Image 1 (cartoon, rainbow, N blue to C red):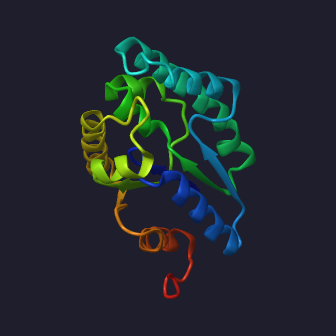
Image 2 (cartoon, one colour):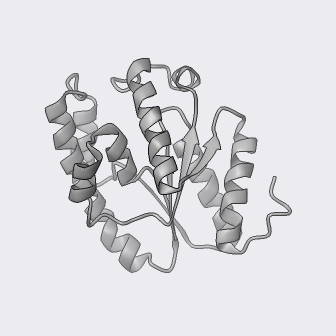
Length: 194
């Protein structure tokens, strides 16, 4: 099973991906944790480009979309091959490109070979709360920009049947909701969940 966490910066994707992976391991599952961008050479290039002052310009966003699509192919052979019987928990997937790099149709086309998650959990959070969490120093942490990204995420969630979790609460409450969502997918009794 391939599980993806999505959401704007500061929503808790990295934290909840790690906590979820740990919980699944405790329940006997072999779990692989991944993130986007990956640790591949392509991922390193993406991280470098994301930190440049012109990272939000249309041309750089198009280049990033193409690089992210290529980076996802580095995961495909693992997710669909070596890890096919295991659980993969990801901090972001191709849906991030839909909201950050768009337009959606083009992003879908260039990602047609990217692995598709079985479950997507959108960690939804108010932009101001997210800004407080992450400090607002990144090029992509502009309130107006993030408000648009959040809106696109919510539209995508509605259109694609994501599970949406209120990420403005404490970690334990958020994790409880995530575990309640995932428990039936794994046959885990949800009675003892946080």
